[in-house]
Length: 509
Image 1 (cartoon, rainbow, N blue to C red):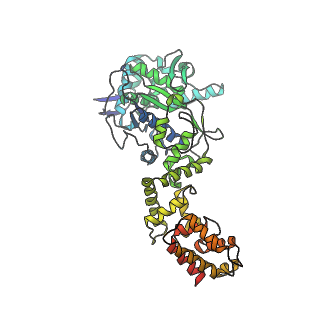
Image 2 (image 1 turned 180 degrees about the vertical axis):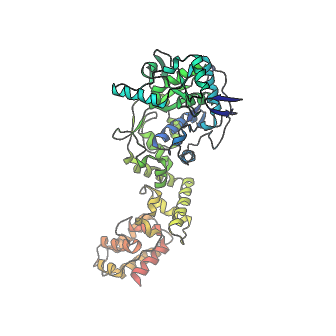
Image 3 (image 1 turned 30 degrees about the horizontal axis):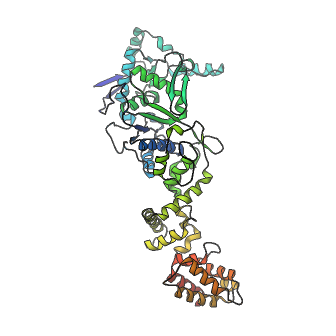
């Protein structure tokens, strides 16, 4: 079948269809439907996560649908980037452009014939009409409303065209859009978060455009058709769409379809109450991926600041979020996101990853890759890296911290000036000999506590050098820096053999 609306001729699209309207929803199906006009940001990730949690809590399906009908604002790579970030976060969709599914296509630009069929039905029932008003006329209406300090709205002029007038304009090949005829009177619906909502949309808005002159639908039509055709049972989306829901429900009624249940999620705001802005470079998920944050930390902090969960403790994993999630406990209060707390969330989750053998193995592999990129000719075995991670557990915020200058001694032997060492102590050679003996003695039975105790016991007996000064000297020998982990931890991180080599080279030669 081919449908002609306006001047766009499109073939029908094969896809799954929803059962008869009016039947109960037996399967939980939710969707995350971003526009690929930019990359995924924190607010979008939170909406996707709430949908994913709801689906997994109830054994349902989580759908990714790309609303790409605004062709002028598409960003190359954004569509793939959105799905990449969902997979990175550990909340991959069950159905998507990449994964497919029974209800595809999952990109609106490939579903145009479905929207045209719906528009044709609305035109035939009198619920929609063609509007031939020019952009110039619409701009004049807008300017006049603003001059009168009124909210601009379309005056519904073309609603009153007769059939003969419409046919005459079509014969002249005049461009047009299709508008939905809003019924008058207040209409109410029950939102699962905000409760009963009443809105007389026709008294404050003109009839909305549902099909543009280029043959592409507006959001109002497309989301209704797609949610119905994809058998979506619950729509969980941001509260900015709450006021538009009345229009969507009126479209469902005009089409004779049963609507899904709606739950509008409170906004995610900055800690000062201002809106998250895409002009803030640090709200895009790629920013946090590039910085080296774990997905667990990101999911934890964006749920910690809002409602819908049991308590707000730090350190919750995705399975725990699924278990605790309760849509009924989501409040209408905006969630204030304090990114200054992200380092603490990251430290807690990185420590948990280090504790788990499987997750620690992933960290080791990742760090090996990073080290190969930074130190081209060097190789570091897994046991060495794993030992460093275990010793630094609780101190690291990011895995990439280990690539900072403070930790360069772990990967490259430092260059130490002899005059710096002798300036600290005239007993430098004696200190080196003592430390080498201690390391040889503890070669086969070494613990942080034992090594610390042995170092303190022997070095406190020096006549001309304070114990604290001895530690400064040894830290400089081992790392080339004045501050850092304890000397005993440095030695255990480097290993006995490497520590002996560094001490002997600097102090015993």
